[in-house]
Image (cartoon, rainbow, N blue to C red; front, top):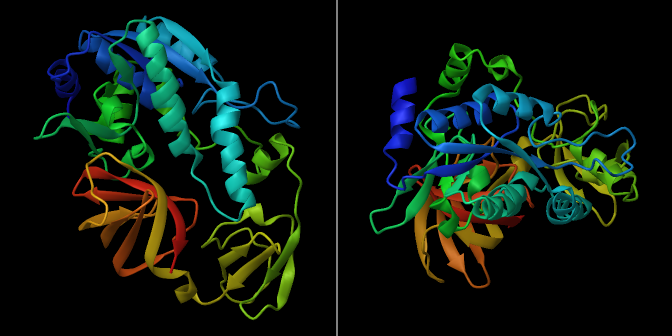
Length: 376
């Protein structure tokens, strides 16, 4: 898609926004998204979300304005685009709504996805509230996803056209009503095109490295370990064992490991081995040399959020993604009481991990999803 086509897509959007609050990290994606909206004749107000734990005793840890090392790059980008720029301090909300629940999941031997919580409650929660306060019609972000009109009315969430950058998985938790006020100018273009637009504009962000998932941390340290230290949680050392219970070595805490992990174990097995089970109560991390031990045919998810209407007891065919980096797999989804659902896969799926999101698609359209509770 050309620059002109990207701008025209915004100009012809049936929602016809006049003013938008643009989430800006200073990275190439958010900067180009704001630029495209400005070129479409939309009044853009840049907003940087201050996250991280700047005020905490974090032992050398640095906070971040989401996706970048500081708010300086965002201010620079907004100045380059000649748009106003504001900082929204969400550090306390970030700790309470995102980081603390994420640590609780790690402590339970699960692997959370903090980005989904941050998107639902902060980027598309607090930021939407702020947009209302400043008289904006909605918010603008650099996500690679699309919001499209539905035949029955309203709007639906769809994959971004760039299969390598599609971020719809992280957005399944958005409220359906919020979609009408969310704008993703990059959803219809490729990442390479985004960089090309930035280069053509002479933007410093054009060559900036990709944003990191974690909003704070220490180089060389895992996110869960940084999180544990930031929140002052105690370490719970334990042991690595094989499937028969034989002790293979010791570790500093089960929170630092996830199902399917192979690198960074530091256990001399002599053969390839993967984390196949985590027992937080005993501190045991089970390592198996059998790759089939990681395969599951079914999962049960809880805390389901649906962007499309579903009925309890109903079932349907869908593609289900169990991690952002995993391709969605064909499955039969059944809606259970209490905000739960099951997904029975046509073929076994590797490393279905409790705590991660299971997101259901029909084609490119996001139906909804939930948090994996169990797999078998």
